[in-house]
Length: 166
Image (tube, rainbow, N blue to C red; front, side):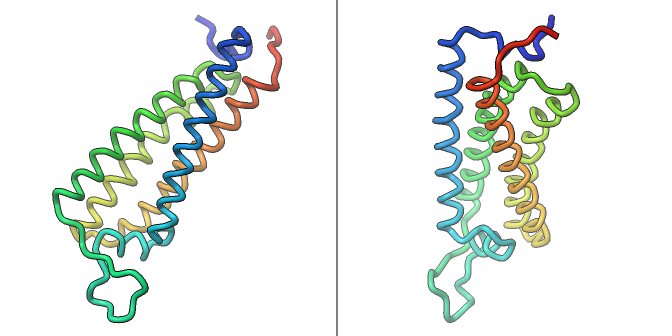
């Protein structure tokens, strides 16, 4: 079955439906990033402080307390599940884009590794493996870059690229 580029040949109504879905999904994703920015978790030390607390520091703008095990498991559980669904749906659309096979496979599969590294890393950092904060930051940035690249490719192919026979 030939599926590479199938997205380009869909009826206008389906293309519009998918484009609107990807735009709304993006609003949700970037709203989550705004929340990350609000919690000062955009640096390795900020990530660590958000989960480990800062109650031992005297002069802080916002007092943060170490998260408990139940809260950590809830954070990890809900984020792994929801992010998996986000990238499953985005990857399902990416399958039908017109791209080189290896690039497409990377863009579809890599986010799942980043999800595990990011949220598993947060849990391991909370358990005392403090160097994980660097891996968490790198994998989170990579996951976001791949999200942005995938969304741009999908929207470009849905809205602007015309079907061509190969």
